[in-house]
Image: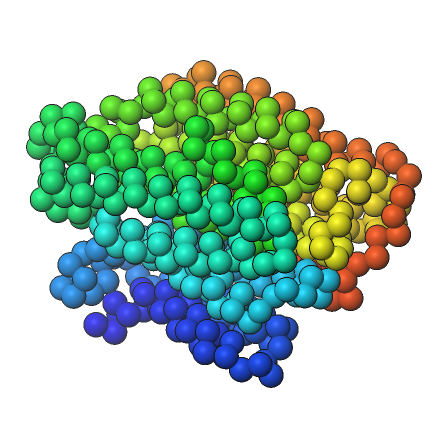
Length: 471
């Protein structure tokens, strides 16, 4: 019993911390800085606990109590580490942002911690109702975070679009779970796997249709084409720290679930591999085309996130269910999270009051006024573009090599072409920062937490690129 609790301790720590932050938010004397520091402390403790080796892989804690609905493995542990780190760095960079944008309330950090709690549960869930509960915990928290700036028209528009479309995605998931239960008599992943092994996927129409609906809901969350239309407007309207948090922690948790569903049995991936192939191609190039046409930095980063989803789909298609370790996917998610959180931390510091610096032109000459900030932004952009020796280059290299080894040559080549196209909009900001005269004094927040956060993440990007994990 005690040993089982150890496996769930990071989840328990974050959940209790979220409740504590919610209770503290009732006290008006508690300052935003105190709430941020507490959130960072909670995430740091959970991260350190998760780092401790606790025993064998593939453990189902409290199996008699939970009936096997949770699974702790190396894959879930590392995914949880990435999610917790995203929460920590978001809380760290938020202070600089809220020094210039005073709409924050103490509930902001409580909601973000509840979202992280739901994301950790998502990575461990082995049953559809548990996935739904965790997914809605995350979604409800992020809905409020997206619309927390009630004075902004853009923020109001973003929450309206996200809430309505997110409700449709939730309905798809619920209908899918109901159909799976009708076809299998259970919502557990183990029972679904057994049913597919016995009769095949397409021989059970209710099961096949239910899984398809569930995939549609998950595709919406990770912005797979054609479920990507919401992302640019929502990311643009959300506060900068929330945008970075959504782009990294949320994507990591949903891809963990997506991997668990697609790799339940070879028959699932084999049946829909053609559909996934075309969705991946359209996701890669639709994201590039949208990003190329953007003048707003946040909208460009939102569109580029669609492209990164495409690369992760290549990895899901290429890996085998029998030999799946998740290392390629997790490495790419970690590299993407470090780069994305880093650039949003820099924007939290540099965007100014009411995010007045939004477009590429607003950052002209930044290197001449704030050379260190320009240097770390350049590192993050080069990593996203896949330029060595950054973590982003190694992540793309691992995925492309995996695709070649799996016989997915066309996807590997298209991934390379997509990476070349993406250099246009990533290098565009570097050109603006380094090859134009400054038109702004770049007066910024008095808080240094976001710059420190950006420098730490830049070091992580370079360290992961120079000393990549073994795949």
